[in-house]
Length: 312
Image 1: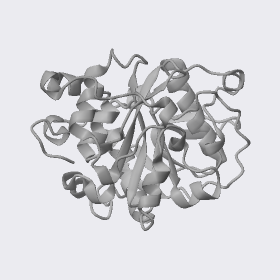
Image 2 (image 1 turned 45 degrees about the vertical axis):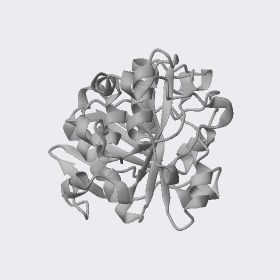
Image 3 (image 1 turned 90 degrees about the horizontal axis):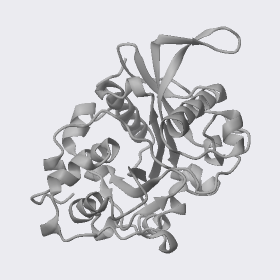
């Protein structure tokens, strides 16, 4: 990450707690198949008070995460649901069947399931897809928006991982939940020897001129160096360099960025070349690229080189 006058690491003073969900949903919604593959084990990755971060333990928990995503994306935000999504009240697509699902659960908030048993509520989730799993199926979701295959081909010895569908229930959008999610991601990265994380994050609005300051800030201050640069697919490419750097109010533009994007920048993320409009979600997507070797050492040390900070 470049360390210029307006380096995001210098300008972002605090990891803003409220999460903004990624718009990793196809422009044309698809009815996904039934979940077929078994979900990975759900041992605890970390805990703060009543909140625990772990992987989903079974397909029922994946469906609960999909219901949480529906509540945030479709009921709270402005995503447009098709008939199947409305009927099931779950945000689901074919990728869910073979992704891993990171969960934050609150053991002090119990809800009855269909059998009347009390279960801890799922209050946050992230969807994770490792390269070897993506290669066995249809690839990474992000490939529909960015030419990430060129980056993968240029780094044959590195292991890639996609992050998406970030989602937190509104009352839990605070520092504690965010830290647990990132603690879980860091533990996952170490466990699977991941070298590069990537995925899309969203800025509200579909008019690039209305968010020109935010896009220009990312272009001038966080654009990936050549060896990590990935371009949006040609037919969806939106120019991010919408004003000269000298005309940009960097602090104001940074302040306007969604909390999730600012959080990624603070961790040391790079931004891809070009944005992509997602009309279904009413957002503009930018590509996040996070080589593990480039992560801010302050945060690596904070969570622990062995992800032990919130180990239970």
